[in-house]
Length: 228
Image (cartoon, rainbow, N blue to C red; front, side):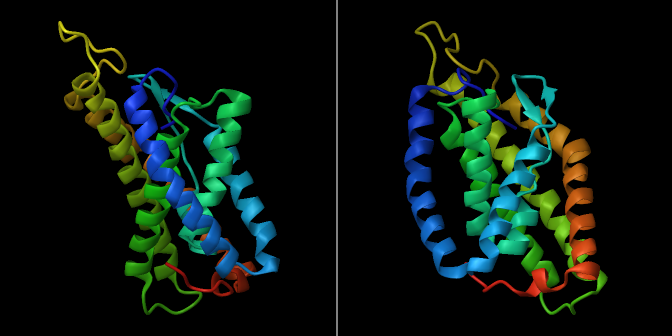
């Protein structure tokens, strides 16, 4: 899902940087407000976990990749704002040090994977797990569904961003200057791979970790202040 340099036009890249700047500001304030000192190491662990799982990239036709993210798992444990910070850190390090995702596309990649993914997946989890008892199967199932929902919504956003480029940036003759594929190609490509393959990887990873924590570290499931 990492968008490389050269696939989004400068206007699109600038737009997503402008969108993410207030989101990063709010996220930093919310994390400072809601996370205890003891939870700060968990935030670093969450960023490291996301970094590792995102390094297992599989190329997708059209110029991007498919992979798990781990964003919903971090959001369940620490809140979606903390997940936004954790995944942003992982994405920035990947772009700057490993060339995984473009530097110009950091704003767009963070919008998809550090904002849309953890928030949509987290609130799907909350909706399904509301009223459930600690240690039961429903939170595990809800975590898996939330993870699947979040990663596919993020993939849909990436597909739309790719597919709009030929409409936004082209020569007088109509030749695309950046991503050459339209929405009829980018959306099915991005959604198909994530619905069929990568979404299920996200489900398995998220559900298994939540089940393990329920059994061995239940305090991690209940020790966070609730936040928006």
